[in-house]
Amino acid sequence: MAYQSNKELKLYYSIGEVAKMFQVNESLLRYWEKEFPIISPRKAGGNIRQYRQEDIDNIRLIYHLVKEKGLTLQGAKQRLKVNKGKVVQTSEVVDRLKQIREELITLRKSLDYLT
Image (cartoon, rainbow, N blue to C red):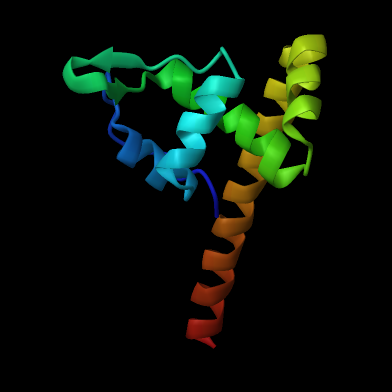
């Protein structure tokens, strides 16, 4: 399951932490940062990226469009430009459905264990 949210909220996340959340390479995040201006991590000393929750939310949208829906980067840019609100809503619904699926699988395993 892609995009594994972190239960503990932090102000800043490293590129490694964000890459792990989405199960992608750090190089992909750096590339998306160049392609999508909505991803703008803070750069600390030594050019160390510090991602805010807003950046992670935007990465989630791009991940949804590119990795889950199969759009090209240009297609994802266009979709975000035309109607970012709808993309956000759709992405949230997909994430919630994935959570429900995981809960149902867990319940099924529990029921199988009882019988």
